[in-house]
Image (cartoon, rainbow, N blue to C red):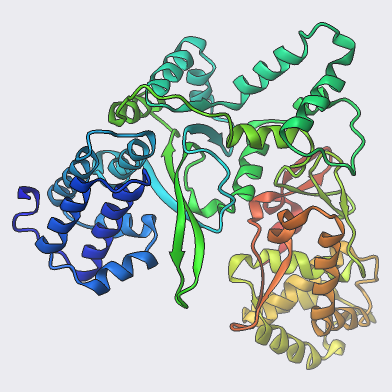
Length: 501
């Protein structure tokens, strides 16, 4: 192959290249003789050994892309040309090959890779379809909606995607279609009953909830809540996607090996940023797609929407914190999360949430407890009264990890508790929180279990990593909102959070 003349790859680059080549060959579940010949030629060209072939089963598609992106622009272009040659060898490009090749082009070629990427998700619930392109946004984007809410522009896009066998999933349009159908049936008085009855054929109805009016559930659906729920459903950590408005297209699912040689499920998604130049980027994406005349099936994101309407998938992916600091799942019923031993348990929960994914080490808790034991409360007396503000100021000025931890626990507990903060006995409650953190963790996790939401609540529980002896919460802080005065704001913008260090 002339494309590889004078190209020298490192062992990891060889494996990354071979990983992508193999995925292109097997994506349509058929091994064509010409494809096998190409693979054999590549193995010979690069002196690929048996160990290299074995190692590709430990590498995800996104990892392989990340390795090859480091190469020079010219070499990347030649590598992409080889990938295109592999797909064209059997003269029958199906939709899966089309999507995978397009995703590889966009993630590797410099003219696209600054605003498109491939992410690989471990153990993702991968029932979304590879033939559906979903518009997703974290926050409302007026420029994007100017394009998608224009019926002419959207129709053109839908028609172009249809030529490649892909269906656009734009939530506002899908809601309008379903509302139009169910509000125009013959007996309008039975719209909700008809919708409920039809949903029973599509997805199981949640038996725990009395359906009042299924059509009213549409009022609870918006693109932001859809973003949070979708990412939670497919176990996509928000940090994986840096864009606020984007296309999400599933590429494939498959098995990989972990460090212990055990198989686990892995799903790959193409993410295309629509944060700016919306029309230009859509045109670039369409220009890369081969457009065979194929049909699509109704599943994936549609199934997800139907589950949402049937109240099976009730959680909107957010946690609301009321004015009295009680926690509520923002679902159709807005169920309260009742922590036993509130406010001590809630103090621990907010504390660990504050420290993010790095969490709080058990040793830090122990050091903070010893630090607190050695505090002389008499040093913080003002006119015979214990001065908590003086202690907090002292802890902040010390600027060591255990002092800052104590500062944050005191601030949080002061906000949640009705105990007198101007009593030196107040510090005894802080000691109890640190000392009994394991029990408080159990109370918190049990409260989420009692919601009976299945595994969807696991991200909000407190984890304890026995290897690193660290407590953390997987749910991103952006999923937490707090009511202050008359509005619900991000928790990180609340008065309480501003006081934390």
